[in-house]
Image (spheres, rainbow, N blue to C red):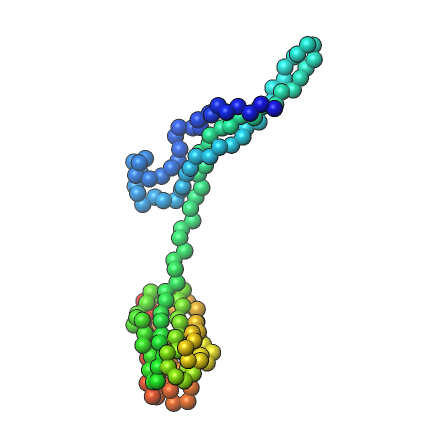
Length: 167
Ligand SMILES: [Cu+2]
């Protein structure tokens, strides 16, 4: 077996997209790079009256292109700090869709967090969350107003009751 170091340059015209090719820079669907591949070359020769099989490998430079999937959008995040007795939100509105709400209990009592979309019967909640700890709810919001409250006795009426908007 003979390995030839000689390189064969692959097709000069790649399908790389980008400004260098005069294409709009908004096209980012493909990513290309050069790679080395081993190519098997089989040849039959007559030597001293005997037919012999000669196998050689040579390195071939090839253009590898792969399609890059559209990036998955990161979930919207809403931080909710709990204290006695109220919530401080990191934002009053967020982009509708995949959402993570994190309850961060900075108070001295346990609290929980209930979430309900205005006009919906469906209600999500964290477990009761001890002081100094966090809980998360991950769900999909649709455009609208959401209520956030603590369900421990009297906590909502004492101020742990607020809203945010998804849009
Ligand atoms: Cu509470």
